[in-house]
Image (cartoon, rainbow, N blue to C red; front, side):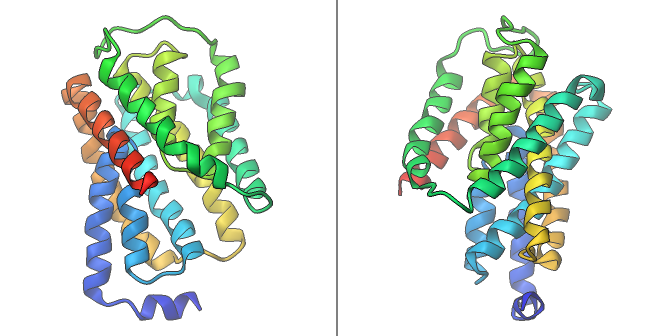
Length: 255
């Protein structure tokens, strides 16, 4: 069935999917919300919704991995410090993908636009959100891992939209990180939840690997460029994009 779906796609359609993945990867690396582009374009290509969600996770893994790897290479993220939150986000996502098959997510869908809009407002109006200055740490790294990382990992497996934005907000407001460090660490945890959800989808045979692979390459290119922009332009670039993406996600979800 999946092979037949791929054979029905024209080369032009596959090229469009690749280009959109590049843009989505760029946005994801900075502010999250690339799914605003990647999911609709996969639906436009004529793929069934379940295949769209599964294939989107594959290409999202490419973007989040290469963004994470760039930040690790640049020393913004230290792997020893992120191992526990990574494991918690991974576990949470696995649980989320199991639970979503058994319950109705419509209530969460109704509340989500307002939650994401609140994130945009926070980044718009928060004071002293500079590149270097860290804020007061409210949660210790261990507590952060077993509460925030686990919960948002579960959310990504259960529903997903805006996970990167939620993670960035949590690292800034609760972890005490500056905006660059928060963005970088959010990408690593987002990769953990993405790869966990992808494994779950792959087990059920829903992933269109060839399309997802092409888009993964596009995501990798976009994510690498976006990661460089984070480090070279900092908060003056991240904040406006976070606000813009949050508003765009809210409007789309409300619509």
